[in-house]
Image 1 (cartoon, helix red, strand yellow):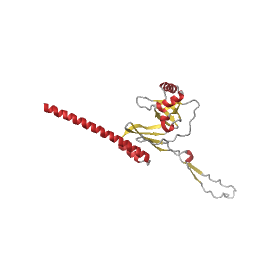
Image 2 (cartoon, rainbow, N blue to C red):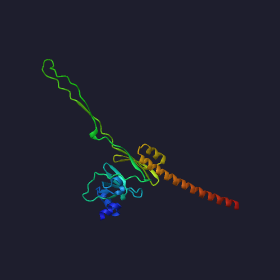
Image 3 (cartoon, rainbow, N blue to C red):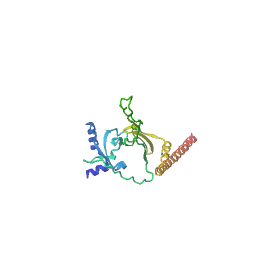
Image 4 (spheres, rainbow, N blue to C red):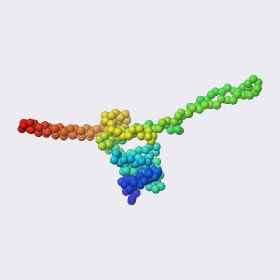
Length: 239
């Protein structure tokens, strides 16, 4: 029952302190992603750092595969003893109206198994005796050129949350750009590059909600301004 409760509620304050003590001792404790983490729920990772929770809600840095990414304590649970990483991934849930999209533009590196080796064979004529000594010249060996290994994978993440669009970039385990706020117009240009109708519909719904809220706020401010101007006119007439 305790394990089930932990998996649903995320890491407790006591478990976070135990992880902090383990990191101080040079260990990297294992954690399991909860349902709140999305598609990677049930997978395992290793905590490599705890940052400042006052700066961001995602302050538990977890190594998952070759990446080190920040997560919220609610996205994680202590890994059960003897747990191993699962290869299966849960299917994506059907998109709901006004859902907050999160997608990644990934340029994967070329694996070593897919590297092509260019082999140039040198044609060698049959060996012939030299000056009657009866010794043949040795054949020239083929030369082999191998392409250098490609760079680490580049991941660019565009996220919408709490009324703001943010952009982040990582290359392998190195963070090139921490999440920073961009203008909605810039975000729409990036979304336009992705030929996924579901993403476009979700973005249109988000922009419609944002536009409606902005119009309501503008109407409210106009009404308040009109009231203040009327009050000012009364005070001027009275003076």
